[in-house]
Image 1 (spheres, one colour):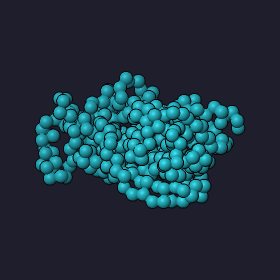
Image 2: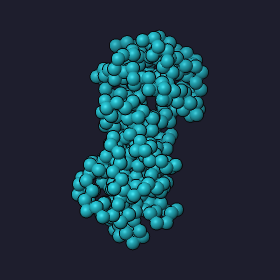
Image 3: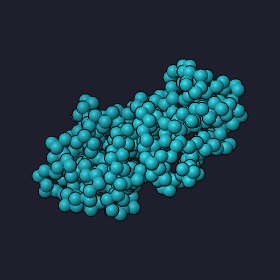
Image 4: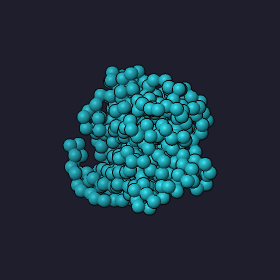
Length: 371
């Protein structure tokens, strides 16, 4: 797990890592470089390698009009280009122009090591695309000295591919304090930290637990800097946050979990990229898929761990999202009922909410009709 955490930090800094797959043959080891932040000189070196490829998610592949039944695909770079411009790679990875086929061979299913590379990119909140160079045994041995010295990090493919699950049950309860709020004076913040240190989540405990209803009112709220803090009109997140706190108090007290899952789990940088694509005419789901993400990258295991730490087992969930109910039930939380929670529908967020209803199955029809 420590090696995986180090790999995530290296990738976020733009440093290449090696992913080893002990179960495979040729291509079992790959040198992985994030596409995000690539410089031209780095790209030139990768393009000259005889087994260099661009690895993309199935969502990105579909947005490019390429059909391949696989979780991820590898597009080998055509040998012969003396210089492959960074722009061409970035366009292939997350742009809205057609793929420049002259730069790439036909896609093939990604190897386990290549799939692991994309998992690490997602965990690092980077664009889910990677440049890889398959290493033969001689090339891999040549890296051993650098690996031993700690100059290059090597991680196993299986652990890297499961990087989202390695921290399960290891959430740390770090600190807490009473924080009176404008709408609810009797509130306490409890901060939890994931073991890799990248994400911190807050449980807003409203009222006194001994006075809570048997079915504890709970809201899972994914952080939204633009909406929660700045009052963005592109979404209804800020109002849902404030209404959620107020409603929980009116229901007798409970918990609002403020989860560090900006942009449905893709991170703030990618959310802003998605906003730019939305301004070009794409809906919120299409924009995320153009960037290589699924329609919702959030995971709720951390919410289960937070509720367990707070001794909350049976809840009444404030949500319009059926996926949250399913995830909590699968995690062992008893969801005894649901309460709807709407923000205002405006000219700026109507298209966003309609896409969530039509594309992701959110229960928003009543709010959309009432406008």
